[in-house]
Length: 214
Ligand code: NAI
Image (tube, rainbow, N blue to C red; front, side, top):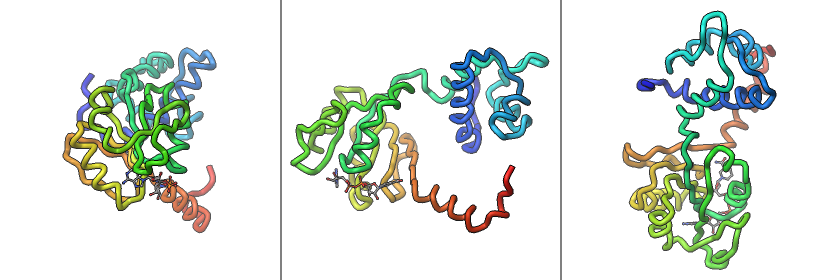
């Protein structure tokens, strides 16, 4: 399936389609029209049709979408049909919460190891996942086929650590440190900043008329 030239905005919406379709599938719903999906998700039916047309449509005129098929296909587009092995850098408050969340595994994301500079953490475990010293990263990445690293360390440390990770062959970085990472074009970075989300909420509270209630 050709998925070239898909805008980031469409890619950002795909996980939400995937979540809703997963819930419908769990409820035993077999097919859904773009109109019904639009009402459920509170987006326009034309937006749904446009988004899914980027991947060849999936729908049949007069039938709608086959929920299970669409769920699987969007999962494939998102790469969720493959297993991803992760490491986490930083076993602090945030790192512990991320490593402690078992549900990522349901989507094929397996946290295999945690790394931290604090020598006191060496040998400790978070949800059974070992905490190891930073110098063990290169060998661990190689041996365990790690493709994604999660960064949850202070921003001053994140840039050199990201460089090391790239040198080790990491292909994707899930960055929680508050710094923009510069990596080669072959390495993908997805940054998550909860405080930015909170600021957007603050904006809507401060300017309620900007987004009228639907
Ligand atoms: P924390 O202080 O509890 O933990 C930081 C951990 O990083 C410690 O275990 C420390 O030993 C380790 N560390 C420090 N330098 C390191 C290095 N060079 N290599 C490996 N490990 C190193 O901090 P917390 O609350 O877990 O936050 C971690 C980072 O994530 C902070 O920079 C914070 O600003 C950021 N953060 C980002 C959020 C987001 O939404 N993106 C939300 C919360 C925190």
